[in-house]
Length: 351
Image 1 (cartoon, helix red, strand yellow):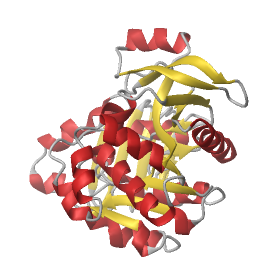
Image 2 (cartoon, rainbow, N blue to C red):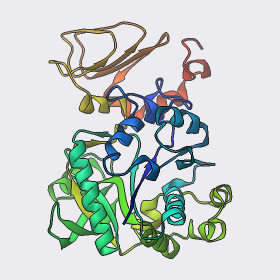
Image 3 (cartoon, helix red, strand yellow):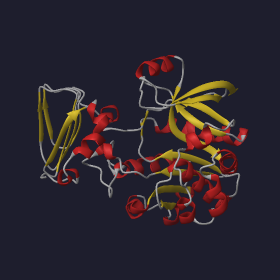
């Protein structure tokens, strides 16, 4: 039984302005290590799935850039979505492609391009167990992350009845919970809920059956245009996530717990969790001098940054533009970007 990987690599990552751009978005930036996030993810997957069975779904404008940083992926496996249509449409199309190339029993492992993973071996072990469960139970399997903090920025999964006690344990999904209040997140962490990571594993035939049964937003387009990418995406009039369109409506969803240092690297402040830090807790990149400065995130590109007597700041300096905010406020950088004069927003230092 063959296994495929699907890597979702669309989006711009506006919360990493001014470093991220439409031509070089978050997933193509070396935010954690020396390689772009996408390259690191492909390297983690390679021991499980060889490049010829790895699909990368992205924006049409990023195909050439991805081909340059990931030359081992066949060009035909870099799929350009003509327009954003939600993860339900993207994963349905990927499953359709895999089914046409390799049959309905092929197993599909879906991940995002822009994560940090501290324990690559643990990550692969969880994916392998999820694939085993998907193949054995003919179910849709998600890997829920054991929370390290009560974060209201994530959706949560309530594990239900035990299906298999082997390994990490496989359970039915009792329910999915939208992003909660901080108080509710505290309670859910204590009650054993898991973060909804967006890691999904299934046989493509089983998934497409559930799409046709439950995803009214996607199923008609798939039935009419399964042979044409442009027509399929053009027929999606209501973009929707796979969680809402399929998983929350299906009775065939299982979950296993994952604990391998997963982080979605959603903001500049998140780099404090995933980058190496100095003795004072500063996560820095570039030419930075810090004195009596603690728990700061600094990205200095082509210029020097000096910190003195400050804490919990995010400082980004590049191309004559310097952005200073706090770790907490960096979660809402999109609001800042939308308020800026066009000349500054586009990366220049003048308005």
